[in-house]
Length: 511
Image 1 (cartoon, one colour):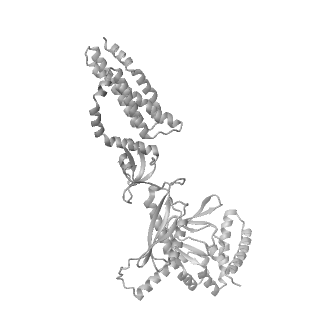
Image 2 (image 1 turned 45 degrees about the vertical axis):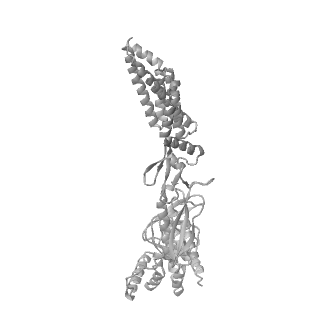
């Protein structure tokens, strides 16, 4: 018989046209809509093996050789497996996702494997293989295979169990074991043999499913009816010179007010005293992390907020009780440090035009009363609408000025080195007109009402000059914004000066 006639007959008998037709229709759809390329490659490989063995079988048949039977049955099996694979990929990766039905990967793998076995057995029986004799004589082989594949079977059963009861899902952050140093990462896939876990170190760990079934597994951040967020503990120590209640209040307010990415607003962060040692109290800030991949970076930002909050409040972190300082703190050294700090304050104070009317002695007095008030990135320095009778002078860093209408908040200005804000709250007591948030770590000084009040009580006439400077500054900005003519600007400056002076005198209770 001619080779091509034999090949055509073998192709009809093996349903090759059905297989190739399914591939021609399904492959473009799969390549466009599906991401399961490994399965698609396996389908193409089996189809290729089907065609190759079909050609070989037809060649031996055309030559009259009996070897064609050795290749006919494998050709049919390869074709059946390829057809099952392409239809399963089309179903699981194209059709079902289009109707919003997601089938777990392990269920897909097991279904394809079982259908492939059924198809192979069915085709082999159709090809004339005596399956009854094979089954009858395979008891010992089955026992040997079962014993050798017990780990594989356990992994398969474990994977099916995990998918069936939804105890672990793709996307979950889990910890295997109960110790902090145990494997910790995000589940990215659950296959028939293993579960793939991506760690924060960009490692992918393949954990056999039977290990998961036999180990303690902690699912991080999951609570029934609640958003995914994980409570974190950040510890710090403060010596007993600071009362515990004050420490808790200062730190808790700072962390709750800070704008830190990944820190949940609800439940609100809180500070608790955990223990009392020989010379210090042990505290912890507990907060809820929303972005579980950023645990250490968020902890770091919380620690910075704690540090700056304690620094502003004059509360010092605890030192070991056995610390020994070898530097001799002489009187000259103390005076030198004090003078450097005072010079630093004077330099910052000089940038404020509203204090230009003050004498050098009065500026020196204000500088000595200023308080060092650093802020960490993300902390809220002032809150719109708050009553806070002090002024901030920004020595180094960058801050954002934001205004809210009750619904949305927008940035209206940026503050950099040498800026100051809060002068109206200091001088007239009016509530804060904007929220100021630190965009970098800030070096700031704070000038309180009491310090300025001590100066103006000695020389009340200074208030008139300060009011004139404030009014001039405000009207200059208004004139540029509203296009005021000279006469209107002059009239508004006069009225603003009178109004500001009256408010300042009432605020500082000066007759």
